[in-house]
Length: 257
Image (cartoon, rainbow, N blue to C red; front, side, top):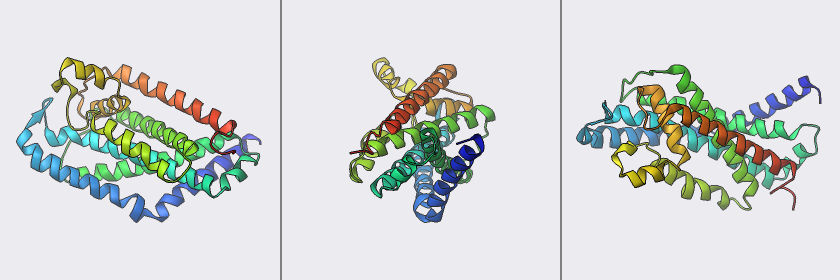
């Protein structure tokens, strides 16, 4: 395929993925918005009023970036995991594999589709947060950069999950038993400076901690870890996971029996 044909193939796949989740928006876009609104009401207003300030900001302002990032992570991941697994289950992915379309285009198309949903939900949650907080963005370009990179990272992770999954139940195992605990322990609701030294060290092994802190730094200008290290870690995770996903796809891992 030449460059024009490759671009058309990629664009077609991305549009297909976007239409897939927008067509059923009451299931894909609305529930996360309602869930995050509940977080804002319960944790921000009710509990936050008793907690007071954290890192010099009201508790509501402190958790807003973390809740936005949490919605981006879960939706980017789940969109690709469910979409690609459905294609694999229906055997339609085999048609893409035997087409002239390069494997990296297939991978990139699904990842970009997942990013679109994650960023879309993140934008909706940001709008919802304006009803509860008037926080301003201190570093807009950094904020945009880290949220796009995070969406790409977890969309890639969702693709690997779909490749490894044998049945539909396998798609929910990682979000339930891995992503959710890591997200809650990733500094969404608290600063790790409140933890004892040992647990601060353990928290540094949590990749979501880096993303939440850089995103919070973009909003508020405060972070528990150096921003440069966090960005380097995110980029490193993306390169590694993309390489693994592409290798698995090219070797038919999880597709060919």
